[in-house]
Image (tube, rainbow, N blue to C red; front, side):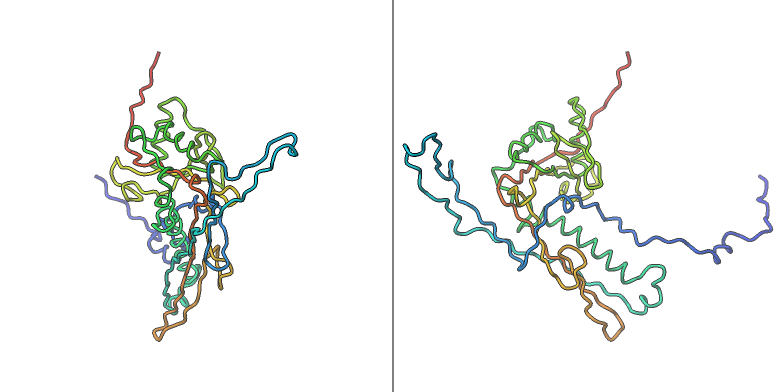
Length: 318
């Protein structure tokens, strides 16, 4: 085997010492697009409390007259009763403290500001937690607070078109979007394709999504599969949500605090806490959030959705 020739020239290793390396900002692999918080309507609060006043409803909330000549018939009298103990939602706090050595921030802040990058990554992490809480919180999360009457089981484990149709019957008043883990979205696409009705797509808030009956199916890893964001195995069970959003539609609304000092974004503030004796600067990040379901029929849940069923698609050549 011939020997490798010796090149009498500057090596790449040596040249590297004089080169300017182009760098990226820190890449946080756990970040997601957070479509839910983009699509959900939010309501700003003044004092951190949101009371959902409801009417005590019967089959007909209030009798009314329907006649061509109201003078011949007595007009019904009555009133609409209010619930005496309506639910109140209090904002929860998601907080984190970031510490940065001032020597580090002074000396190593070019081309990227170390404090700014640390705070930016912390903000993204807090917003990821916010989306998870809107879905999974025991206090106000959509999964735990959906009414029993708004829950459905899959017919055969797999998320079939019939199952999503069942959710639509429960949220039929202007449904806004389905919400599902990416693997559940893929499982539904397989079932719809197998039925010969592959879903069409729609462009929305900067993304492209499949739809069912004209309703977008939004992916999120905050709807876990067997309790995990990224399940390792092929199989697993999860849930699919159908949501109507908006206060005017008596749907689901996200809640946040307005007028925070040092507010960086909706409901999130960053406060400088000072520098300790060791020269470490400290910053407190706080996000105040909650969510409210204004009517029972604003959310429906498809439970025990199996995501691991696959098929062999064989092309028939004639």
